[in-house]
Structures are given as C-alpha cells and as structure tokens.
Image 1 (cartoon, helix red, strand yellow):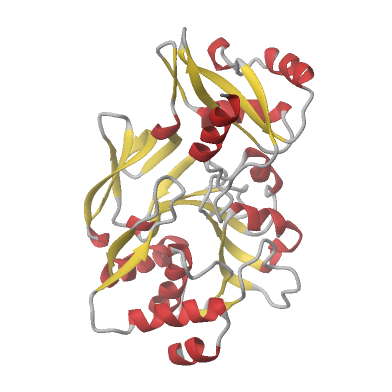
Image 2 (cartoon, rainbow, N blue to C red):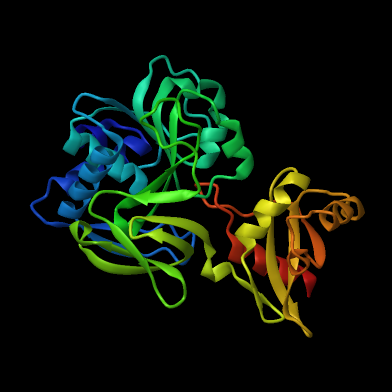
Length: 340
C-alpha cells in the first residue's frame, strides 16, 4: 500500500506512503522535523516504540477501541498526522484521509469517531462538527471566542498539549460543556495521559516526565501553574514575556482580558523603551479606531494598570504558521523594522 501511494498518489498521499515505508524498515528510530512555530525547525529522532506507546496512551485516555473510525485531514509532513497514522495501526482504527484544507468537513458524507484538527480547521467546520464524535485540537492555542462557540454541542472536543519531541500530545483539556456524567466538562486545566507526570523547573516552566516515550525529563519554555503531578494550567511562553519596569507580563494572559473589546486577530508584545526597558504595545490586524479602542481598554476592570498597552499599532496581515499560530517573533521583528 505504501509503494502504491508513493507511485500513484498525489502529493499528500506520497507523504503518507513515505512515512509507511520508513515505519516498515527494520530500524528502531525515525527522523522527524519540528514545526518551527517556537524556534528554528530542526530534525529530531524518535523511537518507533515511543510512538507506539504514545498511541496506546491516547487510546486509553479517550477510550478508543479497535474498529473505531478516524479521519486524517492534516498534512503528513507534521507529527500530528504521523501519529494519527500510528494510532490507526496500533489501535486498529479504520482510517480515511483527505487532503488538508481549512474546511475539511465540507462535503463529507460520513461520520467519524475520531479526528484531529488545528483551531483554524475547527472554526471553519463548526456547521459540520457533529460528524465527528471526538475532536482533538492542537498546533496552536484555542481562542476564548472559538471556545465559546463550541459549548453545548454533542461532539467531545479536547485541546491537546504536546510537541514533536513528545510524539505529539501528552495532555488534554475539555473545551466544551459535559454532555454525559462521564465527561469532566469545561476546564482550564490540562490532564496528562497515562504514565506521564509533570513538575516545574526554577523558571516555573513545565517539565515532562514520560519514560514510555523515552523521556525521563524534558524541559519546556511553557510557564505553568502546577495543580498536581498530572494536572497543570498553561500561563504562557517564557519566550514571549515582556519585562516592563521590572514587572513580568505574559502576553497570552493579557490578550484573554483584551478579547471582549477587540474583534479579529491581535497580539501584545514588548518593544524597547528608555525608561521601562520594554513597553507593552498592542498590535491589531487591519484598520482600527485607535482612540475608541483606547477608551474601551481604559475601562476594562480585568486589566491591571501595567497591563494596559502604551501604544496601538495596525498590521496589515499577521504572519502565521500552517497551524494558524501567530509567529510572534517575526511579527515583532517586522514591527521594529517598520518603526525604525
């Protein structure tokens, strides 16, 4: 089948075929490429057994069983799609694949037990989301607005946390309200999968302990509030922290507070300032009435004084990764270049 996909398939099918051919070699290791959304893309090595163990943990956590149907609508270039293929083989899922698009469920005639998407795909699929029983969403944070749109629907939707180094996700949190007594319901906490524990390092960043994935300990740059050794709340990326006058500001948390008064895409970041070291600024995609927006921000009770942006900038189009994640460093670099 792998050979047939490579020889006769389209571009995406050839990628799937290539992965199967690599999987079927006698070698224990696979070379995969990181996404580059939080740094320079690079090749890393994963063991096939770690990928098998990850698939088993996902199956156990979500109650997947042999014969369940699954839909692959992500590019096989990335770890998320590769792991969908591994889960199908390891768990005995009946897997269909379609070419990746921003609206993968349009025209789909059948329903599926499992599907994985990025947030952009989920947003474009809301009218057809009932065709999926269990939806895993990852690759980029899910916005407050999008989360609000998926409440009280029958599909079980979970936001996942993970990275290429951990064979895709290692934790998940429910995004919509419970529809049965067995569901945990909407929560800000991520719960780790079986066999995975967590801790914090001296930077308050998440450390993952996953022996079954070949990782006794791996440090991340994700600042978290640790609830227990299997539960955490995500605060933001250490890379994005703005140090303004000695106060550490987390853009992701401030953006949540700003969401009620800003339509469309936006972000906050820090730019050099003689007095503060860095000053907090707001970047909005497209045109905006700055005076009116400043007035609305000023009366937001959720924002502390030092969390209010000092300036507002308009950006024509934000640079994004394939999964829809804002490329913050590149956007900030463009802003600084434009401002010079």
